[in-house]
Length: 353
View 1 (cartoon, helix red, strand yellow):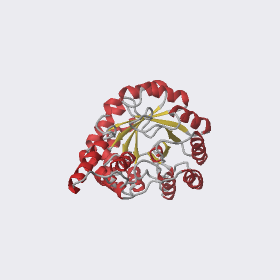
View 2: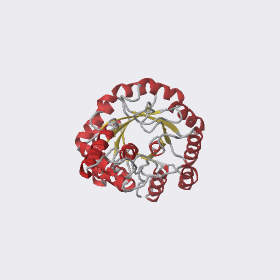
View 3: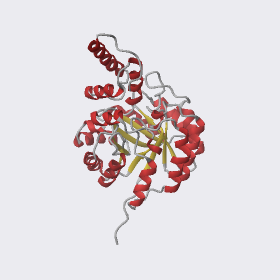
View 4: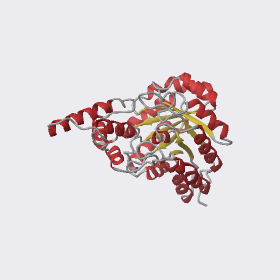
């Protein structure tokens, strides 16, 4: 008798990564409606915060319409079965923010660092463990380093008490073979001390394929968002992941008709602009640009009259990482100066994205 495939746990990040796509303007009512729909569909973990995590509401990253703590409270009040998770980027969010999130109802802490900087997460994992939270590590822009180097960073997180480490394809730049190699390296590195997960983006239209490749290599936690809502071209769609995994016979605990209804009937009507795999998104995937840079590049493009895809290409060539959003303005100014020099007149202002 053929054994059943190992189960996988899907974390829905519509109310966190999806926040990028709506410029962090989710209302409390929207958070309640999305949480209720995800919970009814059997999604086990729902992540809620500003797109850049706790403390992300700021001039540099964009202000939230509603404070994170209130949105976490609203989600926790609506969820009957699901666990509410929060994201924290050390240096942006603080241990105090994490404690506030716990008090508001978050029970999973997802701590995100650049793929070479796992050591900055140590005190945050310690604080989360002291609170009794499940602990998840995010190694962002995982395409930037080799599988062996990524595995070494995963060991740092696990040694600090992290119970699951995610390969995070923040730019949607990885191919399935690159995902398999990285997930397999992490599985070998952490053994039975922690799970391995995948967080995939759609910039090259590979989010679902990469998630399947990760599962085949040993990942047992997979992230998605309803309607692919997220930064850049968005994330692997939760509803598609659930349907594909069901067809493969992989247990997820998710009711596929219910999750399809959540996407079509709850999220789609509330979103004015869904992520698209357009020139800008493909440039992000091709040049390995952090997905949340998209809206920042579009704003700079409109302000300085230069193409957003050119800004993103130069940002990728420069190797900028999360936290360097302010440097996008410098890139836009350089492009505008070159254009002005080429035409013999100052660059005009306007949206040419």
